Length: 430
Image (cartoon, rainbow, N blue to C red; front, side):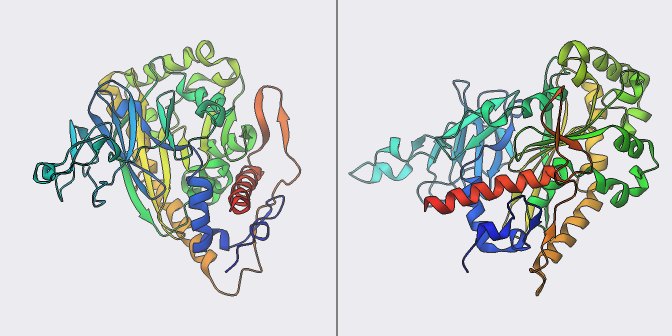
């Protein structure tokens, strides 16, 4: 079936075809046009502190080993032996000097070079091992410890790709003098859903909260009132997004400081609360007066990285076909927080947005139900409507990018405009 990209997404992205979410041919084009050409999140430097440290990652459906080499550099290699294709790394994380294929014991260094072929001594003509290393990800860069890779060797530098999204990510990360630390392996679960809906949910969809999560953040709750009165969505670059509340200057510290919004902060020890207050006390000096007043909600980095401010979690929506997604979710803490407080702070994330989290279960059910709606027969003439707030986009004197109220769906329209441009670019280059 021929794919008409312009028919799938209208010019202003207010109408989205159900095929965008369900069509296998569209998905194959996404793999080439988006995942083959964008910066993709791989992990955090805190996960690979020492030489020989490694973690597993994915770039779309391609398995990746992210590792710290003996020389201290970070390497990303495709986890597939160049002899018969088996994975050479089977542990989620660890420290090693060699990755060894279990089939014929070909052995690779942490940086991906082929070191040993056991059968080599049995043949007269030895192969050139320098040409048989693991396939390397051609571009690997990091910002504030967040490591990204790209299969596109010509892609712009990561800092340019992030653009003003750094302003919004830094509003949280830069509050902590020692930066942030990823704790443990990611929690992982598989859903019958398209990869884009979890991304869209975290880009700026704050107004499903009072309905889907009414028991905790209904419109008459404190969080719901704050969203109504103080929420903004900022789109620094199409595809990226940040939703947050910009609180008044006279907001009490316990109503503003990161960590107090969750049950961990509210029920934690006085020592924990004093630590959270001390972080906020330094915020104006560390991130400036405007960002010190930010009380974040959800962020997104194109194409598939999400961040939850209050619950301190980074998430990646790994596609596993047009109708399946593997969701990875890490708990994140301030790197220089006392170790005993880190144990409490990591629960900010898991209790609400781990696979068994109170809110995550409700989101997951909605995403799977949307997938059913995207696949039903005789309904694609009724496209999904994304036009709420169309034309109301504006700017803010203190905030970079296009800025809207929380109810405006421009965050999603901007994502799909970029999605459309990427797919059209690949289609025209063929």
